[in-house]
Amino acid sequence: MSERRLQEALETLKESGVRITPQRHAVLEYLIKSMSHPTADEIYKALEGKFPNMSVATVYNNLRVFRDIGLVRELTYGDSSSRFDCNTEKHYHIICEKCGKIVDFHYPSLDEVESLAEQVTGFDVTHHRMEVYGICNDCKKKEQH
Image 1: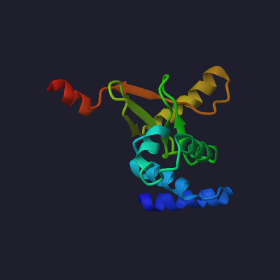
Image 2: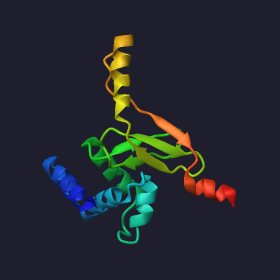
Image 3: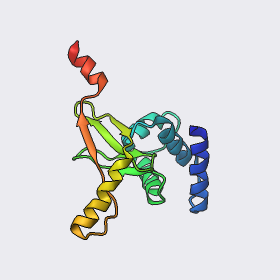
């Protein structure tokens, strides 16, 4: 599954006229395989052994390119570092208040909120975002011990 997504993403890059460098390929592959909503710094740390000359700025610039052509979404929660999500389909996030882990979940009936908001306010709704906060299973287990 992730191999097909990687090929589709590489095809999107080509169609957008973006040169596919080994670093871009590695960043994209890491994002698609990790599914953990990593920060630019986490991606950099994971790839620095393979690309010793690559900087955090290079990783961030590549993520910005991916974001601008619609391959990734940049998630900003509070004042912490941006996280990057390669799942660009409509979905929501639940975030652990202790460790910051983010997990995707789908709830299609929330789409009705947009049409209701339009009817009630007269706005043209473009999108919405919802976050749910709690404590993940790993952190709950740590608390119990």
